[in-house]
Length: 419
Image 1 (cartoon, rainbow, N blue to C red):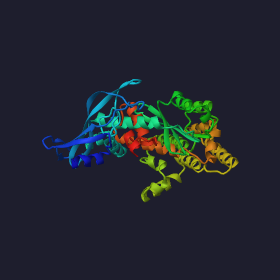
Image 2: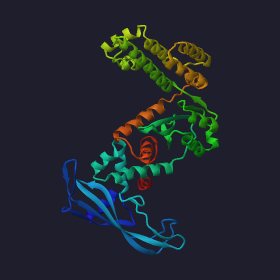
Image 3: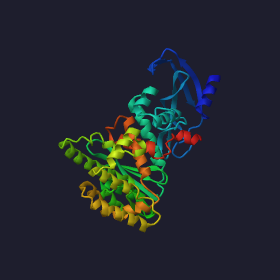
């Protein structure tokens, strides 16, 4: 009986539940995990020994019948551990027949709360496939931990009215498949994930947030996607901010287009001077090796068209962080005049785009916010996708984003109640 009392304390079981017996079975070894043979099984048999009450209203009720249930628990030493119980069902005059809730597992789960909590911690660090292999589970069982954790977290979450919002899209698969991610820039958490990048992807978030909470949004950092802009303008009175990360990305692409065209012309004339220089024009000088810096210094001091495009892009990179709107407008006006007269069509195209979104760009130049958090979240999402070797299922991808970046309370209910 000493072992029974010990396992009661280890499991956190309290009256009216008690451990009846603990059985060690050495003749049931289970599969190898990471090359080592794990021993037999520890069977913990639990029984209910008190009055029965309705799990819905708490009223005392007569017993109806019992159902045998089994749960996987954390290993004891090297032995896989299972909890067995004959769980009573009661007949309530008001609510009918219901099964009693057990204090060591969530309803409907085949794993104890402590096992689920351990799996959740592993899933924060590794892919579903790796955790399944490490814990001796199937992929579906391990993905179920993540799904239930997110469902619990979203069910407990109370949408707080954001002040600074970030909107971005991230690729789901190739062929231009996207999900839209909305995040609270002050709290640094994802608050909404939706399929695609159409207007409906963000409309649903604002409708869930409600008119009063939307009125409290002051600024939205986002790219220049028209569908998102129109949704923000309809549902909020916030200032739209198109910051340096998106604009410099457009300019980097423009510089690369100029380089490609010029390289073709030079190669046709027998000059290989621009070969293998793509990364020099896109990479920051602080990341270059000394030989690359010497080569790049010679290229950017030349009369090449790409050198002029690079200089225009660098001026834009330095046109942020102004204390006054007038200063920012004067700086960007000088930049626009230079870019539009550059006779470099890719650069002129970006300049016309910035003129179309002029107010939002100036907002970014004088604003204290940016979508740096949103870009950091996007980078983390891509890391999650690489860790999983991609996702074929949109719902799994959405759940993974919420799981890692949603800031959710995902603990199993018995652990929260115990705490």
